[in-house]
Length: 462
Image (cartoon, rainbow, N blue to C red; front, side, top):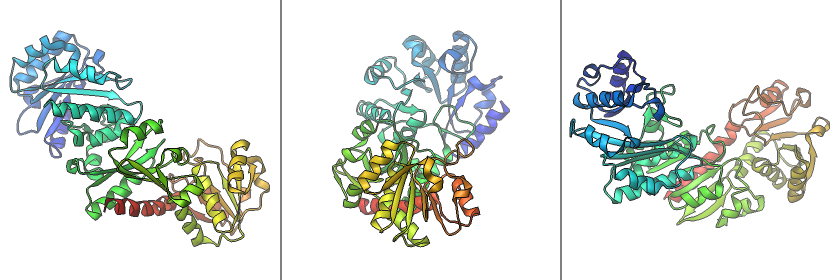
């Protein structure tokens, strides 16, 4: 109880509405917990069969919530499975308490969302809440569409997706009419998967300032949690005083995502593994990106997708700061979009790239497209190299991966470029630097391409 009261006071300094999960309390004293002054309070008491921690009977659960209502709880949250009879009985204790009728799905976002919504309206709560697990980012858009219907029918509703795929919905829900969104006080106090901290929602995403005129940008890829784009672009939007937001969209279904979000996005960044896969979905594409066959930036104009590539000029400019590319032997590790871009930049500046890949078929195919040499990693140690570029994701999980390059490969004067942005100094770069090589980090690449991306986004807004 003392910890609950402490956290309630702490949360009350940040917001005027706080949910208290009393199923996590060993001793409940509503007189102490609901003593004013305090923020408005939602009391939630979920049984273990409802995904909570309360191990008592249904009757005990009902009695505890009845007491909470009599003691002045502003809202109580009960599962829709209670039915209209029990919920009506609860309401009779105190007509001033708002009842949130909830449905939780920890496995998926229900296929028949509209039917679920209609059934829940018949129960007679003040606010309908549907919290479901997103299988892909596109599930968020289904929730937004349902919120649109609820708003048209004057039905107060909370709709959100749980899990990492659902984070975009937690940020954007208010724009589409969700009565509230949930945040944790800190990283260790989340009450549902995918929850974002209160400070992040306000300071990074500015959810208290979002409206239907806010331009939405983001990062599309898998994974996306490592990206610093939300900090970089949102900071620039705030500094430039533009009504825009940048957030992560984790997706495993690119076509489904594009179909779902086409009408609300103004632009987005593209990361692994979609830089090449997105090309067939574009309505137009800039010349360099077309020749390269890889896109990392998309602008959206009236639902039309326009592809660009800021990785290419970023890579070229960073290499130019360290050395001249003309005539240099460039070894490019990887066969994906980043490796393709690095090899293309080398060719465009009169260098001689060689693709090194784990898959001979992919390495041969990419080399054939670009008109350069290729080989496998087993031949890497014999290669003569002036510039080494890592375009693979190896390095993102230090300690769990085998080194791509032996330390004996490096020599003084070599330039080593690792596109992995986190950690900033990968094992590859640490070994190269200790051998006297000039290094270029993935953080430098991120910042440079993001600066170029930001210019495109801001120009698009204007």
